[in-house]
Length: 408
Image (cartoon, rainbow, N blue to C red; front, side, top):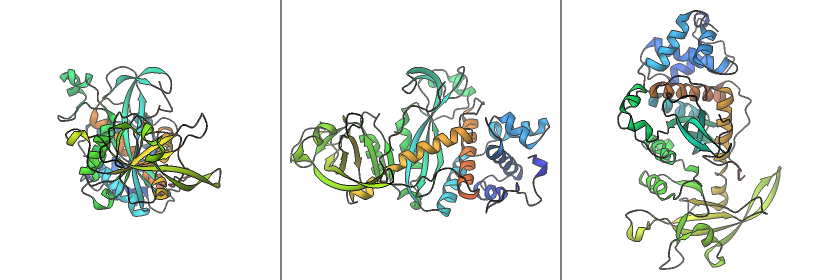
């Protein structure tokens, strides 16, 4: 579709209940200039309709046969100074306005790259392929409901190499104040962005932090923001039992192996379409925290354990701040992680999150914002046939931060 072929009402001719024009006016109302919203509509139309890779050149050819289309989209994504934060917040509001969300979750994305000029590119070991790859590493936050899982916010991991060379950082237009830090800390960035919005701050964060050496900093950070969480953790996660007046720190796997430290819970989950009873175990614990008396926080959390099911299914552990919730209700949230993994695969395949070819920090964030907006529109307004992502009492096999499905 060419930019000059849009319908007289500004729509793209979509048969969806909300035209693309109306959606852009809703989600991109923070863009004060009419031409910016026009290019936003063109870019979204390309992401929604161009098959295969969503490079800027291919998107431009879909809206205009002349070089003006490519130049306009290039300016909109890489040079125009519009803020992506308000647009992402508007996407979240649009999603929540259509279906009540139940949780936030986070997933990682590995974006293979050639060369060392793309912002954030570095070499890291990819456990999926068993190789060291040249890539960008991103994290996305997802708003999850019974029938949807939609990307809302994005962060790009920057290692120390991006701070050792000021010229490289300046060429990539990385703002001052953006630090080098591990990807798991992005959870607190995402949570902080919605902390002032009661509708979203009340939702729990469902996370897979099995690769984090200690979830204490995340738990403490979410606690300071007044937010609850359900985190899957590694068996080596240090905890302290509250069943004894004085208890040493112990690995959660070791603690839960002691029969006196746990309580059984019989829950029913769906397996191959049929209800299946499963015996879980729980215990109350505290987490280590730097600066707390004896290094342990005073807040009490609950550990949930699904015992091992044969040699191929080892025990799995979750720690949650939702201590007053029923075990069944807490387990009903853990499917959010699997929903985000499936949605990320859809973003890779159909919405171009791997395809941005620019080199700048603002350009990358602009492109990822457009991909989120396109995915939300398809999910909410255009009759997407992607699989439903309802939260079920199903324990997913995938994990946050696991190997990317497509590697270099």
